[in-house]
Image (tube, rainbow, N blue to C red; front, side, top):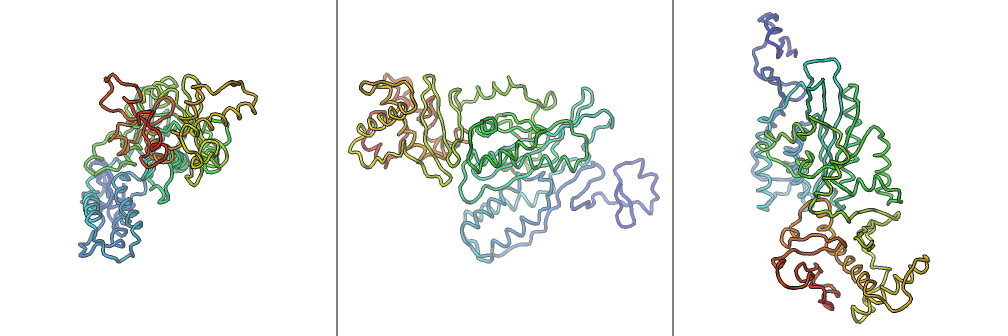
Length: 471
């Protein structure tokens, strides 16, 4: 029931009859707490902001319109994401507040954003989420997290169960833009999980219900690896992992990207698409059957992933370095290092410019590797270098060059976010962690290296000096 001035409005016909006619309003829709309430359908909708016609499009006007949309629960955050991204791109252009935007690309983007904002009141959501029975209901909070190169997001659902009846509804969502300073996708995924934990605490406090359990799902195996590892992590990662673990009531599991509701928020959506998107409003279909993913189910999801092999794992080690380690059936361990400033260290810090040929460089790297093994008292050959040692050293340099030049593509493959280069060349990562291309020669009678060539940057010295690997 709502009091409007001196008149009353309610969604119950029985209560309406009991209210005197002079005290009962005849309005169909009314404003409640900054939203529009339809008492007949008992739904809420976001108020459409008043957008004045502009002769000259400016950054000030774009911000004014986007900020005028009041959506504190983030119910329509996928729609508003496009406007926020547009505003961020305008900031990158170093425009003043009242500079006229003349670029047609920005004008077209604004046209799409404005169209969705003008239709924002057409999308409504239920006001009341409670079940009919008020006794013996168990409540759980389910959180999904996701990230892309442009944003990271979290969505929270209230899971209600009474006997065999189950109800799942979206109660809160938050989307944040990725920093202008480039950050790797795994770290953005970590920020998404951290935001999810903070939002879970907030929602649990505000609902004032007896929550039985809280659960988080993410499609980043890298973040799950950081949470489970006992190795020393970089300061940036370890501080956020510590805060996530401090929320002891939460259990974190893996979910496929295509089944992740938060993926809708990081991609963005139109009003028309969001209105009928059941994944966004009610979560995954299996949440009505069970909300804690069995370990076997999570294991199968990981093994079925087409872009992540069983023998590949990503870990972060050393207090200031991001180390990616690949293990194949023969326990081949190859590592390259990317520090917080995105500088990549060559294998053993060797300066490649001091070598006249790739062969000399590879042999020197193999000897350095053998020397390190001996200092660690590991078993190694005492005779001439073996073909296995030379191949390992060569792969180390290939990995170094690929991570130096194609880091964004590699992160995208691991996190199942397709990039333009991956689509164009059919890129994938083999069991040794090397980036290769799938071509049209899979059935040709040629070597495996020629069928699936290794991707190397054209201007690098390694590419110019060496063509033995089918590059």
